[in-house]
Amino acid sequence: MTARDPAKIFERLRETHSQLETGILPESPESSWSPARFTDLDGHERIRLAKDAARSLGVPSPFFRSIEETAGTEVRIAGRTVTNFASYDYLSINQSDGLATAVHEAAIRWGVSATASRLVGGEHLYHRDLEQALADFLGTEDAVTFVSGYLTNCSAIQTLVGQGDLVLVDARAHNSIYEGIRISGAAHLSFPHNDWDWVDRHLAANRGLFRHVLIAIEGLYSMDGDLPDLHRFVEIKDRYGAWLLVDEAHSLGVLGKTGRGICEQQRVPPDKIDVRMGTLSKTLCSCGGFLAGTRELGELLRYTAPGFIYSVGLPATGAAAASHALKVLIREPERVERLRELCEFFKGLAGQLGLDTGESAAFAVQPILIGDSLRATSISNMLLAEGFNVLPIIAPAVPNRNARLRFFLTAAHTEDMLRDVLMATATLLNRSTRSFQAIG
Image (cartoon, rainbow, N blue to C red; front, side, top):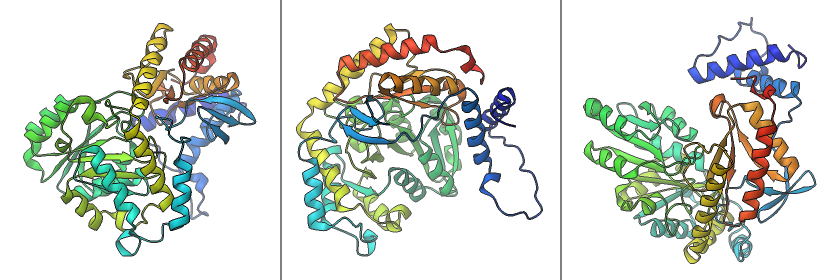
C-alpha cells in the first residue's frame, strides 16, 4: 500500500476508525520470535494510515506546529504572525504585569529544581501557600497540588476506589479519568453524556452491589464546551451515598461571575462537591493540577495518593506562576466578564453564519463541527494560511463523524478578531471539496 493508492488507504483508515469506535481491533499477525518492533503496534499503523491518507490528498499535518514567539493573542509560526485560537490562557494572564517578576523572584529564592517527593524532603512553604490560596478561593477546607493535571485525575480515582467499588463516568469525560479508573481496578460504566437520569436509575437498581460509588463528570467539557446539570448530580450522589468528582480543568476562571467555577455558576454550595479537580495549566498560567475538598480528603491524598507520594512536588517557579495568576483573577474579575461577553458574541455570530457549534454553551471552549477528519484538517491548514491558528480535533479523539475545529477564546481577543476568523471559517467550509468527505 502506498500514498498512490488513496482508495485502499481510505478503506483501511475507515476500518481502523470503526474498530476504535467499537472497541474491536484485529488480531496482530503472529511472528516467530522476530525482533520486537514498535512499528508492529496497532497505534503505529493508525498513525501511518492517517499520514498516508492526508498525504494522498496533499493535506499537511496541523499538529506540532512550532510556536516561535508569543505576544498576547498573536503567535509566530513558521515566520508568520497569526491570531491564536489554540491557547488555554483563557483570562490572558500569561503576559500580565508582574507574572514574570514573580517567577524570577521565586527562582532566585528557591532555585528551579523540584528537589524531591514532598513526603520525604521536597515540602516547601510555597506548596502550602498555593494550596491554601486555592482552597480559600474555591471555598473548600483544603487543596493538594500535583505536578501534572493528567496525573491528578489518575491519582484521585485510584486513591478513592478499587475492587468492589463502582465508578459511573460521563461518556465524554477526559481520558485521564478513564485511565484512573483502569488503574484502580474498580468496576465502571460510562453513562450517556450529561444524562443524570440514567445515573439515578442505575443506582436505584444496583447501589447495594458496591461498597463505594464515585460519579465523575466535568464542569466544562473540553471537546464540546457544554455543562452538566450540577444540582441534579448532587441530588443523586446524596440520595445514594456516592462521591461526586467534578473535573474543573476548563471551568476554573471561566464559569461564575468571579471565575470560581461551576459551583458559582450554578449556585451550588462548594461543600456539596466531594472532589473538585482543577489544573494549573490553563487560567493559572503554570503546569500541574490540584484536588480540593475536605481536610480529610487532603490528608488521605498526601499520605496515600501514588501520584503525590511517588512523584515530586511543583517547582518554585511553577507554584509562583500559579499563585500570581490566582491573585490577578481575584483582583480583576472583569477579565471573567470580558471573556463571557466575547464567548456570547462568538456563538451568536457563528449561528448567524450557519456554523454548527454543536451542544456548546457560550463559554471559552467553542467547537465548530465539520464532520470529517481530513476535511477538518484541511480547513485548519487553510485557516493558518489566512492568519489564524485553529486546531482540528479528529478521530480517534472524537468519532470521525464528529470531527471539528476547536476554538479557545481568551479575554484578550477582540470582536474584530472573532468576526474575521468566523467569516474565514464559513468561507473555507463552503469552498472545501467533497473529496474530503471520503472517510465516514
